[in-house]
Length: 219
Image (tube, rainbow, N blue to C red):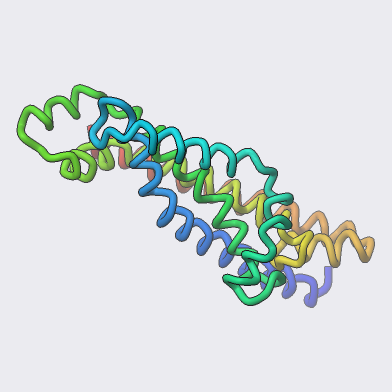
């Protein structure tokens, strides 16, 4: 493999990392509050708003049910509005964020619902207010599960970022399609696949290790 291809591979890996990191950060920023509300706004819960809970839950489920490649194409007008273009690495962040937000919301909801209800009852008995319970009990106790969920989301976004290369999104997927598939270069395609596998393995290992450390610290 030529030095030029190796350079392109390195640049594409950086683009993929940029897309995934920004989309994960924005998805967490938007999805975390939604996830907390979904976990605490059911009937008889801390912020009881059953109708709100059902409506938001339905919207989250609807967004999650759309295949990513269809979502990326369907929201091209919105992508242009936000990023000024529908092509390129920065533009790809828009559909990645839209796809990540409901996924992260459900992950955080599930992690919070997994917290022992006895801890909530104990905090309420001590006079803690709902927001105090959320930030001092629910989120700290759910943190290991949240870390595992965000690790899973990161791996998912890496796969999505490769897909978005099919519509000019840049990154490793774009490199694999343009140089590997369209130019009949199986060595380039293989290099892209191996790079993605290595990156996913490293991220999954780091996420698992961090979650174990947090779990031991809480206990």
